[in-house]
Amino acid sequence: MAKEENLNKKIAFKIKINEKNIQNKYDYIRQLVDMTHRDLDVILSNMDNGVRNDIPAYKVRDAGMEILNKYEEIRQIQEENRFLNELIR
Image (cartoon, rainbow, N blue to C red; front, side, top):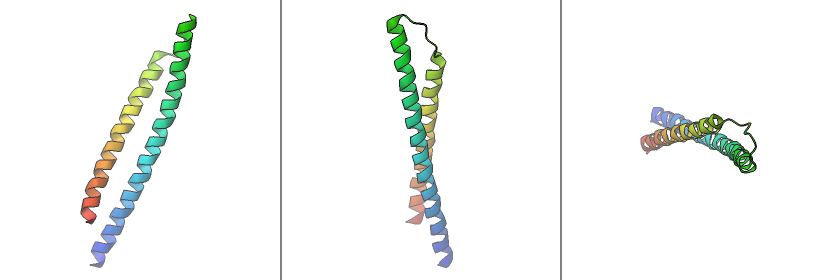
């Protein structure tokens, strides 16, 4: 019984670490979205004013891909947490 309790505590700790990891990834995504939004504003403003863009389009594309990758990582961690929660029950 003590071994099972110890294992449950370890699993609960892992779930807590995963939740913190998810929160960190969401924070990172928010930062990327803010930066990309500013970049797009500059690009669109420059286009409207006929000014050459200093921000390369690939920078925005790469940020979008990074956001999608982070969401996939979050989904995988959430799936792991669902599995770990089932183990504890």
